[in-house]
Length: 313
Image (tube, rainbow, N blue to C red; front, top):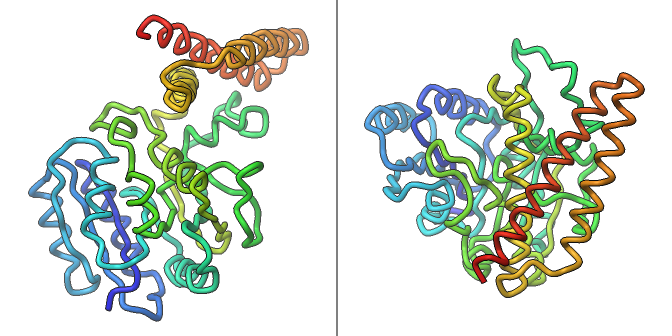
């Protein structure tokens, strides 16, 4: 009987997927029956051929999801999974040697949980970190390059202090995902169009329904940092998208309208960030100035989404 399903959802990234599959070949195998699903969004003959080449070294199944969107691909993984727990990673991630074993151990030792998330480390490769790129000054930049690290110790996930896990390194009970309504297909990536938030939204929904989570610091994947994410233009567009999305989801949770307190909170954030930027200008601190710009754009996008919601209701 299959006890664990590993899923990799991919979209036209065969060469990157090859590296991910190679890392899965090299990882230690868990002490249970498991399977690997490769969900190919829209279908690509070259990806199908690539995956077939791993049939002798991985328990892999290739499945096409024809509807564009990574949320649709992940929902297809939910429907195809033969195991009660579904473990996701990305099609460009490199899993560490102990990843599967550590995740399997955490799932077995914490059966009270409905989801388990691991550590995601950025792989900078040959890239140089820009002077203005500082995650300590601007934590939002961690999200922009897909980074998740809340310490070296395995522990309970704390919803009041910890960010929701990302599907780059996330295991979920299949029944809990179904009960929560699956991944939201209006969120996520649609080919080259990036919206995001579908994984965070699902984890938060499962938690609101009483689900518990566990942080598996010892289950590690590396995520390559794409060069195009190390530009100011990308970072600011990411901040805008995140602000827009945060208030869109807030409106959905409040009957289609953004509550009044949220306007005030966004305006206070915008004003405070302006002051922070001015301080950075006066002190010549480029990192502080850019962190403030990110926060200004984030707050402005919230306000814009709130006003838009008023217009459509």
